[in-house]
Length: 162
Image (cartoon, rainbow, N blue to C red; front, side, top):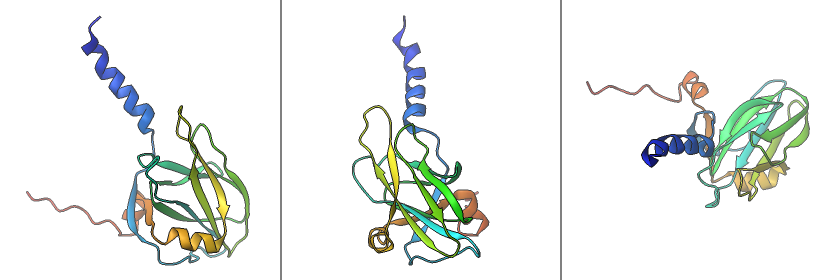
C-alpha cells in the first residue's frame, strides 16, 4: 500500500479531531470593569487565565446547551442570561460544569480551568468570587462572537487594495 495515499486523509482527520469546531471569536477589547448590561437579566463573565499548558485549545462555553462563545488562552466572554437555574459547561467529552441559580440584576463570574487528560481536551467551569474574578480577569482579552462584533460595528470591513 502506498503511504502517500494514506498521508493526506490521516492529516485531515488529525486536524479535524485535534482542532475541533469552535465558534469564530474576535478580540474586541480588554477588561473595563464588571458591568451589568441586560435589563432584567443576570450578567455572566466566563474567563480563562493565560497558561502555556493547553494554550492552543479553544473551549466552547455552553449555558443550558446554548453556545455563548469560545474561550481562547487568556480571554473572557460576557453574556446576559434569564434568571433561573442553569448549567454552565464546556463542550468537551470530559470535565464538569456547574449548576448556578442566576438572579436578575446580579453579576456572576465563572472560571474555566483545564484538566490534564491525554486522550482529549477537558475543562471544568466553576463559580469564582467577584473579588477573585476582578483580579484574574484584568489582564485578559475580551472576546466576542465574530457575527455579534460585526453587528455592533466593532469589526470594520476590510478595504480591497484592487
